[in-house]
Length: 401
Image 1 (cartoon, rainbow, N blue to C red):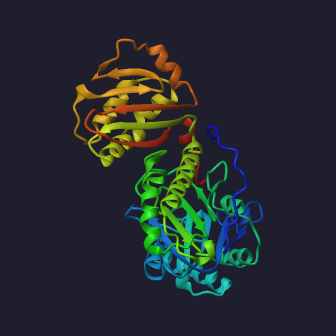
Image 2: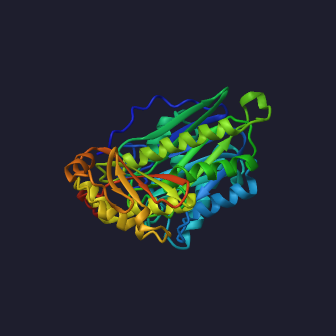
Image 3: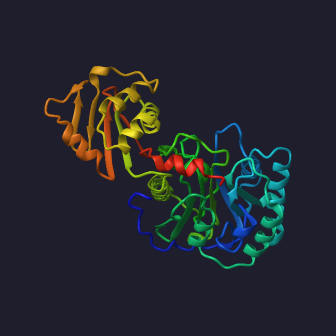
């Protein structure tokens, strides 16, 4: 059950982009017609593109092909085709062939070159890819007129709700969708995310902006500590906004992009498999931002910490022990720890006014924050995570059945 899922307003259409969806029965033939599981985001013009990709060494072929396409054709991308229900990963010699067939079919349906199409797949790993059903669905989606929220529904796997967000920056629009619920851990983007804008920005401008936005959003969340084989985030810019005039100051756009990515990333944690708590972990007083992220991520992924969250047990010892396991240099007698407005530790010692019942009351909330100050510098970072419950085990023990 998602933790306080947001009430989403309808996503904003983005000039230069069309959406199509289809029901292919990707996971099983009998599911065809029951729910959509394929989407096409088609561009009317050549788009500049940026991407971030999983660091898992077992990368799906669609990831490698997408990274190559962004590198070689990043100024002329015409669309994204994506399916849910089957990751087309770990499937051997046919994997690349199936991924290329998916791309070629989408390119043909849109009347563009295969090198101009990006693809993404998500779902079960190691299961033969139902390419014939997918090809049929691609042709159906290419002729369909859908909305961004339909695309968000079509890429879901174990997600309990579809995830989208929009921003306006003057006369420019940004809309993004994401999917993710399990196998979520920062080592790129931890899920699938597709973002489109009509901003007149080049690939050279988009790529570093996307990396910075991902660092503060999709790379700052963890549900279960597992990085997927298929994690990908794409950002496409049609350039149709502002009459095609160059955007002189990109800072406001980057701020909006980062905010949109954070909003989507937080939705993923709220919808984490088996999650019943949404926890913000703030690391302050670090020697560097990277140190702060490393400590925050180590706490976020600790099974002992996450089960304490689940049990509403304010076991502060587990939190500081996890921080000490992060491989970051800090002095134990400098650290301070608080949960919401309750001080637990100060200068490495239990705070004299701390009472366990106060900590337990905070940990019983569906949302709360942990703030750890390392006392080593001025750098800070924020990560978001959830708890670890029996429901997570149930979902994943039965994932293929």
